[in-house]
Length: 56
Image (cartoon, helix red, strand yellow):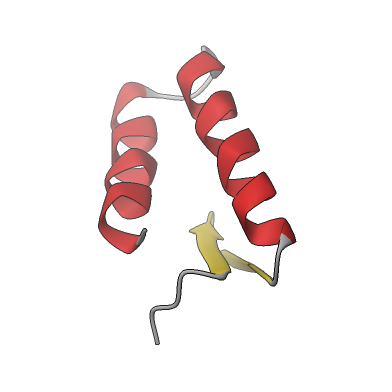
């Protein structure tokens, strides 16, 4: 179920979920990290970015 106050991420087979007011803070931090994550592979970063664009 898609809600604006919930963050659910699946990375390397592990699912991370945050909900409540902190979700928006985490979303900002995650987006910042994605923009600055030079160690992530391009395809992996693109997939994560697509996930966030489609889920918020």
